[in-house]
Image 1 (tube, rainbow, N blue to C red):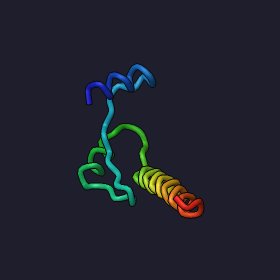
Image 2 (cartoon, one colour):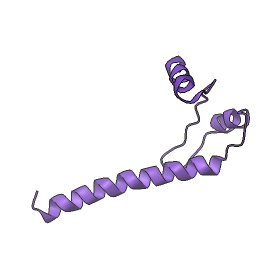
Image 3 (tube, rainbow, N blue to C red):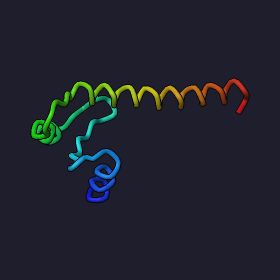
Image 4 (cartoon, helix red, strand yellow):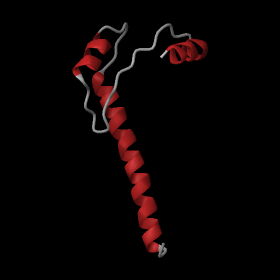
Length: 75
């Protein structure tokens, strides 16, 4: 976490990084919600969930399209 804080401060001028974990289907733990509520500024859990779900959909789409392509080409 120290390296992440240092790198974020260097790149974006951020003082502290607070981890908030969002599952692949948008689940958020109670501890992540508590940490998020203590962060300065406005942060919407809904936006984090949306990003997680869209990212999961992207990965699945890529994997499934690759599999379909392999089947169509006899691989």
